[in-house]
Image (tube, rainbow, N blue to C red; front, side):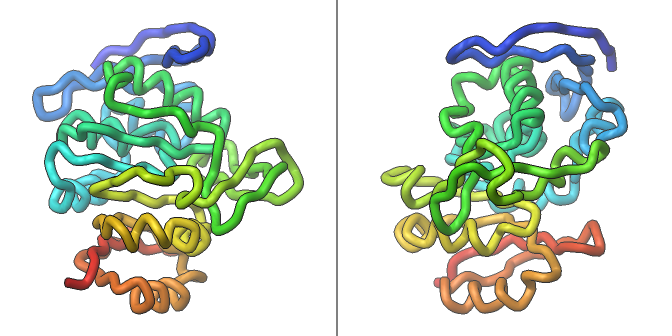
Amino acid sequence: MTEGATTGRKRRGLFVSPLAHVVRTTVHGEPIFFTVNNPRDSIQRCHLDGNFYEPEELAIIARHFPLGGSFLDIGTNVANHTIYVAKFLHASRIVCIEPNPPAIELLESNVWLNGLTKVVDGSYLGIGLSDHAQENVGLTYRPRNLGGARVVADEGVIRLERADSLLAGQRFDFVKIDVEGMELAVLSGMAGLLAQHRPKMFIEVDNTNAAGFEAWLAEARYQVLERFKRYRANVNYLVAPVQ
């Protein structure tokens, strides 16, 4: 593993790097690059060590993702899962949904460094998903957990949309949802997409949403195939449509 520094600015239509350390590592014989600007952040700390974050969760996705399929990454953060799915599961197309500006800077850098600009669609970066359209949303997060950002109404300039509106007409083979407690709202806002295409999904569910998630499974006719608990506050589920 080697480290260096790189600088850059955002140009229209391009993925470029912010001021940060760049880590080069090798995973399964493949060179991988991570951009790190906060070594105390929980995800970036793994990247600084040359490792992907949440390897058990990535392994679950790998068991169910159709090689070469399309991937919708809702809550992309700094692109940990996007890089893995592109590099090792050979996704043909990945759409990233991430509203958090500091995360987007690192996400764009990671996509560019790993040569994924032709695979990753960043058209919707800066927009979040929910069950209804909303303007002037803000985000709050702890300095050591960029991925833990949570929505705060009327305290920012971020826009939320329903996936059924934002992504109308698009088909995805697999959906990952990690939205810090907003998973039920996101699922509600993509009911049409799910009913039409029935993708498998990997979803992080806060404990406070457990009962609502069980109700959603029954209503949407999805079933749990695998589950994994890393933190006390939530559980990860791999779900698939009931045949």
